[in-house]
Length: 517
Image (cartoon, rainbow, N blue to C red):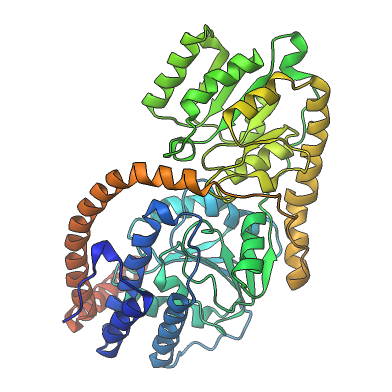
């Protein structure tokens, strides 16, 4: 009888957790052990107190790696006789999406041309939410073979992935796992590819796989690189900067302020970037920004109706005309939208910064102002900016800066922004870092920073009652899901299920052969 998960998936120690997991492995219940690690990590990252505080755990990573090695050793010998290097790069991910995030990063690696051969994308689909059709359409221009692990339990997914990786024997294996994907980390065994690269995109929460000894550990932000190398002591760390295709710089001079209409400012991001529990509220601050600049503002990204109402009410109370705010729910390119809207100044989102949007703003030659979050440097984008860029801790500091900002300063910052892009975030910079291997240049030095631990505590004290209520509700749902998963895992592991799947596969094959005749 397995021990039940306690308190929504948490244990009193990782020793207790791994003792439970190893007990399941000892009786051959690989699926349950993998699921246990997945649910534990999910419970940790779901607690807001852990964000940008807990990043990695070697005991969990080692368990996943060793379990994967054990399963690999138990597999029958492969009949496939492919030699090393017959397959190009393989990207192992939990799931991918139609836009944004690590999906865009993966696309940048494909576009860069640094990894020859036809690429293969393998998805674990551990959470069962991947849309294979959307992903295939997303990567259709690149002639990529997208494959998804079977709709089965974690052990069956792991076996399938290990067999595929063994048969492919890729030139490069890139691990793009979600935080809690125990199956992906277990599958990324040394020797299954000529080189294995852990791409650390999930760098703001606890993430499985961070501490393992891969050929390369690639971080995509200055914050992540310095933290992994200098504080977590991760080996083989390299900095692979975020990039954006160069869409050029507009040739107009002075932009909107030249007509005496004040600054044209901009923000970009959806509600998940702006609408988080935090001392400073975007809906309250934006009308004050408009009042300070005496200009106009454009926002790209979907916001909630309460936030929009707060903005409108604030503008009305300050006597600011509604037409001074332009709200666009979605744009295909922040870079091009900044140029089309003739933006003078871009504010990085807060309390959670959008790193890729900052890169596009820099490339477009738009000056950037970032928030220095009191939670952690991972929440803001100040370390991605040119050294002369202004950062703000409090709204009063931001408003005071805007009140005295001169056109000449903005013109100079345009040059600095573009130079930062060309040096650090152009596609050529990423290609150079890849080709340099372990000799890639490090990320730029970090700015001085210290968090406000007291304010962080006060925030947590306010939000925890609501979080605890939600957690209790999730515990009940999680229990029902776990019972359903255990039932499905038992079905997937049964001989009758395997026989049914084999018969179905044979039937489909015979139908295809019959249709071809």
